Amino acid sequence: MNPRDATSRILQAVDDSGTHYRHSIPMIASENILSPMVRRACDSDLHGRYAEGLPGKRYYQGCDDFDTIEEIGIESARRVFNCNFANIQSTSGTVSNIGALKCLAKPGDTITAVSTADGGHISHARMGAVGVRGLNLVTYPWDEGRMEPDIDASLSLIREKEPNLVLFGQSVFLFPTPIQELADAAHESGSMVMYDGAHVMGLIAGGVFQDPLREGADVMTGSSHKTFPGPQGGFLLSDSDDPKLQKRLNNSIFPGVCSSYHLHHVAGKAIALAEFEEFGTDYARDIVANAKALAEALSSEGFDVMAEDRGFTESHQVLTRHGGPDSGAGMKAANTLEKCGIITNMNMLPGDTKAMSGPSGLRLGVPELTRVGMGAQDMGEIARFFSRALISEEDNASLKSEVSEFKSHFQTVRYCFSEGPAYP
Ligand SMILES: *Cc1c(COP(=O)(O)O)cnc(C)c1O
Image 1 (tube, rainbow, N blue to C red):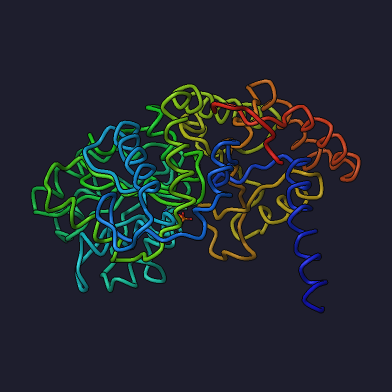
Image 2 (cartoon, rainbow, N blue to C red; image 1 turned 90 degrees about the horizontal axis):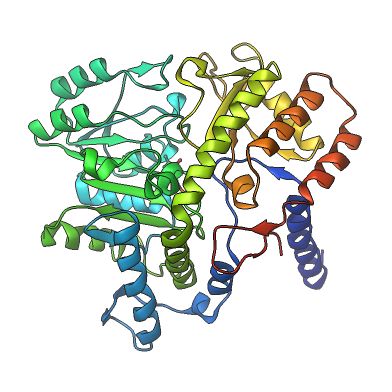
């Protein structure tokens, strides 16, 4: 393809992607959409600029306006997450984790974390950031019924291994982790405690999930674009008032792991934080209510929804099982749903061993659907679409046009200062 054709082909695909999502029901739990004001910041002159350092202490000239932005953003993050220290520079949740691991551990140290098979993130694994930092990984014993670390066994593990760093948080995250007792045990042996809230930052900030910095976490990392409704990026937070730790945390991002830290996204984050101060409590409450409503509705339609004994979910996620271990039934369901205009991801469930071909489950998320104004009744409508696609196996093409008609009523981003098109 010649370069000019490549350019138009790419721009066409960019527009097509917007059109695709405009007509679909997007249910990827880690995804969200931008408010019009955040979008404006992300598409600004700041995109091409550098501002190494901190507000007022820069290595380059020309940063006065950006200093204003970053200062307001930091203040807002400290209020939103109710903490003494906030760094909003990190370019992703993974980058926040690499920075935090650099600050809190050294090569050869031992870290405890949730295994990827149990819903932990790749950055907590040997193949990811934990391996990059050269840490010795020990994973928590897992309680499959409660879908959280086995607390008694993890307590013994922490007491026995005396890890240097105790890490909590998951990507498959239905319920708050009861970290208090584990954090106390960690602190007794001099370990630091880190909580990775990538998926649940918006729920934590909205006061509807858990409050890790009050429950014993020394440092909290997270993404700014999952349940937290900002642009792609990361947060690094602590309630410590120790200036030495704060300095080391700042240094762990710049110069530690970032040079440019994507100023347009920092400006977007700062606006998303301000909007969260105004709308975040309602937004977070509505997300969890929708996740619960979706789980109930899917269960009533006859689907096997995980963790029924615990009320299915306390987060933005719902997990469903579509067949036995390693059956690949989750992959098959995700493919069928996509043909019907519903975008989901397959997910490994207890017993599954093959990540690419075997997953028997789906992980469903409701943040984006909540942001465009859907409520409990609409979750019932979506569960019926699931049933018609996967149980009664209706014609995919005609379901897809019904899905598109249903979605046409949800085209405006809510919970922000200037509501506007969700898929411009
Ligand atoms: C998504 C996720 C991350 C990584 O975040 P990115 O912003 O995608 O780099 C880190 N930790 C957990 C638990 C996650 O789910």
